Length: 251
Image (cartoon, rainbow, N blue to C red):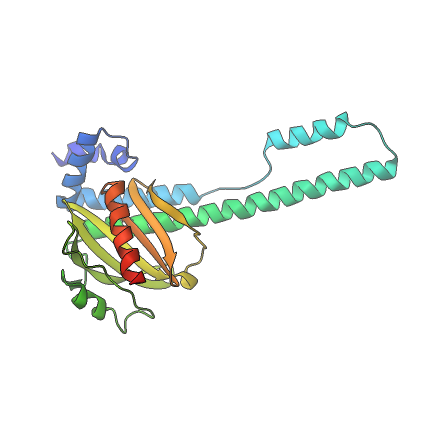
Protein backbone atom coordinates (compact mmCIF):
# COMPACT_ATOMS: atom_id res chain seq x y z
CA UNK A 1 0.00 0.00 0.00
CA UNK A 2 2.84 2.39 0.88
CA UNK A 3 4.40 1.73 -2.55
CA UNK A 4 1.19 2.95 -4.21
CA UNK A 5 1.52 6.26 -2.37
CA UNK A 6 5.27 6.52 -3.00
CA UNK A 7 4.67 6.77 -6.76
CA UNK A 8 2.27 9.67 -6.19
CA UNK A 9 4.41 11.81 -3.87
CA UNK A 10 6.07 13.89 -6.62
CA UNK A 11 2.71 14.64 -8.26
CA UNK A 12 1.22 15.39 -4.84
CA UNK A 13 4.06 17.83 -4.11
CA UNK A 14 3.31 19.66 -7.38
CA UNK A 15 -0.39 19.83 -6.49
CA UNK A 16 -1.38 18.03 -9.71
CA UNK A 17 -3.36 15.10 -8.29
CA UNK A 18 -7.17 15.08 -8.44
CA UNK A 19 -8.73 16.55 -5.26
CA UNK A 20 -9.77 13.15 -3.84
CA UNK A 21 -6.30 11.70 -4.37
CA UNK A 22 -4.68 14.84 -2.85
CA UNK A 23 -6.74 14.27 0.29
CA UNK A 24 -5.90 10.54 0.38
CA UNK A 25 -2.14 11.10 -0.01
CA UNK A 26 -2.26 13.93 2.53
CA UNK A 27 -3.95 11.65 5.09
CA UNK A 28 -1.46 8.87 4.37
CA UNK A 29 1.61 11.10 4.78
CA UNK A 30 0.42 12.10 8.25
CA UNK A 31 0.50 8.46 9.41
CA UNK A 32 3.43 7.01 7.41
CA UNK A 33 6.91 8.09 8.61
CA UNK A 34 8.54 6.56 5.53
CA UNK A 35 6.46 8.53 3.04
CA UNK A 36 6.75 11.69 5.15
CA UNK A 37 10.54 11.41 5.13
CA UNK A 38 10.51 10.72 1.36
CA UNK A 39 8.31 13.79 0.83
CA UNK A 40 10.68 15.96 2.88
CA UNK A 41 13.59 14.75 0.74
CA UNK A 42 11.75 15.66 -2.45
CA UNK A 43 10.97 19.16 -1.11
CA UNK A 44 14.64 19.70 -0.32
CA UNK A 45 15.67 18.41 -3.76
CA UNK A 46 13.25 20.80 -5.49
CA UNK A 47 14.66 23.70 -3.49
CA UNK A 48 18.21 22.77 -4.49
CA UNK A 49 17.30 22.46 -8.18
CA UNK A 50 15.50 25.81 -8.18
CA UNK A 51 18.52 27.62 -6.79
CA UNK A 52 21.17 25.92 -8.97
CA UNK A 53 22.68 27.61 -11.99
CA UNK A 54 20.41 30.63 -12.26
CA UNK A 55 21.86 33.61 -14.10
CA UNK A 56 20.23 36.93 -14.90
CA UNK A 57 21.38 38.60 -18.11
CA UNK A 58 19.57 40.51 -20.88
CA UNK A 59 17.66 38.09 -23.11
CA UNK A 60 18.66 37.48 -26.73
CA UNK A 61 15.42 39.15 -27.84
CA UNK A 62 16.37 42.32 -25.94
CA UNK A 63 19.81 42.37 -27.57
CA UNK A 64 18.33 41.88 -31.05
CA UNK A 65 15.85 44.75 -30.55
CA UNK A 66 18.64 47.03 -29.32
CA UNK A 67 20.82 46.25 -32.39
CA UNK A 68 17.91 46.86 -34.78
CA UNK A 69 17.12 50.21 -33.20
CA UNK A 70 20.74 51.28 -33.49
CA UNK A 71 20.97 50.13 -37.14
CA UNK A 72 17.71 51.86 -38.13
CA UNK A 73 18.76 55.33 -36.94
CA UNK A 74 20.21 57.86 -39.42
CA UNK A 75 23.99 58.04 -39.56
CA UNK A 76 25.47 60.79 -37.44
CA UNK A 77 28.90 62.13 -36.74
CA UNK A 78 31.47 59.85 -35.17
CA UNK A 79 31.12 61.74 -31.90
CA UNK A 80 27.35 61.45 -31.95
CA UNK A 81 27.55 57.76 -32.85
CA UNK A 82 29.98 57.19 -30.02
CA UNK A 83 27.62 58.86 -27.57
CA UNK A 84 24.71 56.78 -28.86
CA UNK A 85 26.68 53.55 -28.52
CA UNK A 86 27.82 54.52 -25.04
CA UNK A 87 24.24 55.27 -24.07
CA UNK A 88 23.05 51.89 -25.34
CA UNK A 89 25.86 50.13 -23.48
CA UNK A 90 24.95 52.01 -20.30
CA UNK A 91 21.29 51.03 -20.70
CA UNK A 92 22.27 47.39 -21.23
CA UNK A 93 24.50 47.42 -18.15
CA UNK A 94 21.80 49.05 -16.02
CA UNK A 95 19.17 46.62 -17.32
CA UNK A 96 21.48 43.69 -16.61
CA UNK A 97 22.22 44.89 -13.07
CA UNK A 98 18.54 45.56 -12.39
CA UNK A 99 17.56 42.12 -13.71
CA UNK A 100 20.27 40.48 -11.61
CA UNK A 101 19.15 42.36 -8.48
CA UNK A 102 15.46 41.63 -8.95
CA UNK A 103 16.20 38.05 -9.89
CA UNK A 104 18.32 37.57 -6.80
CA UNK A 105 15.56 39.03 -4.64
CA UNK A 106 13.02 36.65 -6.19
CA UNK A 107 15.38 33.73 -5.67
CA UNK A 108 15.95 34.66 -2.02
CA UNK A 109 12.20 34.97 -1.43
CA UNK A 110 11.55 31.58 -3.02
CA UNK A 111 14.34 30.03 -0.95
CA UNK A 112 12.78 31.50 2.19
CA UNK A 113 9.37 30.03 1.42
CA UNK A 114 11.02 26.73 0.43
CA UNK A 115 12.82 26.55 3.79
CA UNK A 116 9.56 27.24 5.60
CA UNK A 117 7.87 24.47 3.59
CA UNK A 118 10.69 22.15 4.71
CA UNK A 119 10.12 23.08 8.35
CA UNK A 120 6.38 22.51 7.96
CA UNK A 121 6.84 19.11 6.30
CA UNK A 122 9.38 18.13 8.97
CA UNK A 123 6.76 18.94 11.60
CA UNK A 124 4.25 16.74 9.77
CA UNK A 125 6.74 13.88 9.78
CA UNK A 126 7.82 14.28 13.40
CA UNK A 127 6.26 12.34 16.27
CA UNK A 128 7.08 15.32 18.55
CA UNK A 129 6.53 18.44 16.44
CA UNK A 130 6.30 20.86 19.42
CA UNK A 131 8.25 21.34 22.66
CA UNK A 132 5.42 22.97 24.60
CA UNK A 133 2.15 21.06 24.21
CA UNK A 134 -0.93 23.05 25.14
CA UNK A 135 -4.15 24.39 23.68
CA UNK A 136 -4.00 27.34 26.11
CA UNK A 137 -2.44 30.47 24.60
CA UNK A 138 -1.67 31.69 28.14
CA UNK A 139 0.59 28.65 28.56
CA UNK A 140 2.23 28.67 25.12
CA UNK A 141 3.10 32.37 24.92
CA UNK A 142 4.95 32.56 28.29
CA UNK A 143 6.96 29.45 27.38
CA UNK A 144 8.81 31.48 24.72
CA UNK A 145 9.89 34.18 27.17
CA UNK A 146 13.67 34.12 27.56
CA UNK A 147 14.01 31.86 24.53
CA UNK A 148 13.34 34.55 21.90
CA UNK A 149 14.41 38.23 21.73
CA UNK A 150 10.81 39.32 21.12
CA UNK A 151 7.27 38.59 22.24
CA UNK A 152 3.98 38.16 20.42
CA UNK A 153 0.28 37.73 21.10
CA UNK A 154 -1.92 34.73 20.28
CA UNK A 155 -5.63 34.93 19.42
CA UNK A 156 -8.51 33.57 21.47
CA UNK A 157 -9.74 30.59 19.43
CA UNK A 158 -12.68 29.48 21.59
CA UNK A 159 -15.25 30.71 19.05
CA UNK A 160 -13.41 29.19 16.07
CA UNK A 161 -12.64 25.74 14.68
CA UNK A 162 -8.90 26.29 15.11
CA UNK A 163 -7.09 24.40 17.86
CA UNK A 164 -3.68 25.45 19.16
CA UNK A 165 -1.43 22.38 19.49
CA UNK A 166 1.70 24.03 20.89
CA UNK A 167 4.99 25.50 19.75
CA UNK A 168 8.75 25.30 19.60
CA UNK A 169 11.73 27.52 18.85
CA UNK A 170 12.93 27.30 15.25
CA UNK A 171 15.46 28.99 12.98
CA UNK A 172 15.26 30.49 9.50
CA UNK A 173 18.87 30.84 8.48
CA UNK A 174 20.42 32.33 11.63
CA UNK A 175 17.21 34.05 12.74
CA UNK A 176 15.48 32.56 15.81
CA UNK A 177 11.71 32.45 15.76
CA UNK A 178 8.55 30.79 17.01
CA UNK A 179 6.97 27.82 15.26
CA UNK A 180 3.35 27.39 16.34
CA UNK A 181 1.08 24.59 15.17
CA UNK A 182 -2.68 24.78 14.79
CA UNK A 183 -5.21 22.17 13.69
CA UNK A 184 -8.45 22.66 11.80
CA UNK A 185 -10.56 19.82 10.37
CA UNK A 186 -7.64 17.32 10.27
CA UNK A 187 -5.36 19.89 8.63
CA UNK A 188 -2.16 21.09 10.28
CA UNK A 189 -1.14 24.74 9.90
CA UNK A 190 2.26 26.11 10.85
CA UNK A 191 2.66 29.71 11.98
CA UNK A 192 6.21 31.09 11.97
CA UNK A 193 7.10 34.39 13.65
CA UNK A 194 10.48 36.13 13.29
CA UNK A 195 11.86 39.60 13.73
CA UNK A 196 11.76 41.36 10.37
CA UNK A 197 15.24 42.82 10.84
CA UNK A 198 16.76 39.36 11.40
CA UNK A 199 15.67 37.96 8.04
CA UNK A 200 18.23 38.06 5.25
CA UNK A 201 15.73 39.16 2.62
CA UNK A 202 13.00 41.80 2.55
CA UNK A 203 9.75 40.06 1.68
CA UNK A 204 7.54 43.12 1.34
CA UNK A 205 3.80 42.65 1.46
CA UNK A 206 2.19 39.38 0.36
CA UNK A 207 -1.55 40.12 0.54
CA UNK A 208 -3.82 37.11 0.89
CA UNK A 209 -3.00 33.42 0.74
CA UNK A 210 -0.96 32.17 -2.20
CA UNK A 211 -0.01 28.71 -3.37
CA UNK A 212 3.70 28.02 -2.78
CA UNK A 213 5.39 24.62 -2.81
CA UNK A 214 2.00 22.83 -2.72
CA UNK A 215 0.90 24.78 0.37
CA UNK A 216 -1.24 27.84 0.95
CA UNK A 217 0.90 30.64 2.42
CA UNK A 218 0.07 34.04 3.87
CA UNK A 219 2.77 36.43 5.08
CA UNK A 220 2.86 39.95 6.47
CA UNK A 221 4.89 42.29 8.64
CA UNK A 222 3.41 43.84 11.78
CA UNK A 223 5.05 45.79 14.61
CA UNK A 224 8.54 44.68 13.55
CA UNK A 225 7.59 41.01 13.31
CA UNK A 226 7.26 38.87 10.18
CA UNK A 227 4.46 36.30 10.22
CA UNK A 228 4.13 33.26 7.95
CA UNK A 229 1.03 31.04 7.92
CA UNK A 230 1.52 27.86 5.87
CA UNK A 231 -0.45 24.65 5.50
CA UNK A 232 -2.53 22.39 3.31
CA UNK A 233 -5.80 23.84 4.60
CA UNK A 234 -7.94 25.93 2.29
CA UNK A 235 -6.97 29.48 1.38
CA UNK A 236 -10.01 30.69 3.33
CA UNK A 237 -8.83 28.91 6.50
CA UNK A 238 -5.29 30.27 6.09
CA UNK A 239 -6.65 33.80 5.68
CA UNK A 240 -9.01 33.35 8.64
CA UNK A 241 -6.17 32.32 10.96
CA UNK A 242 -3.98 35.12 9.60
CA UNK A 243 -6.72 37.67 10.34
CA UNK A 244 -7.05 36.37 13.92
CA UNK A 245 -3.28 36.66 14.42
CA UNK A 246 -3.29 40.23 13.08
CA UNK A 247 -6.15 41.19 15.36
CA UNK A 248 -4.45 39.61 18.40
CA UNK A 249 -1.25 41.56 17.76
CA UNK A 250 -3.16 44.80 17.20
CA UNK A 251 -5.16 44.30 20.38
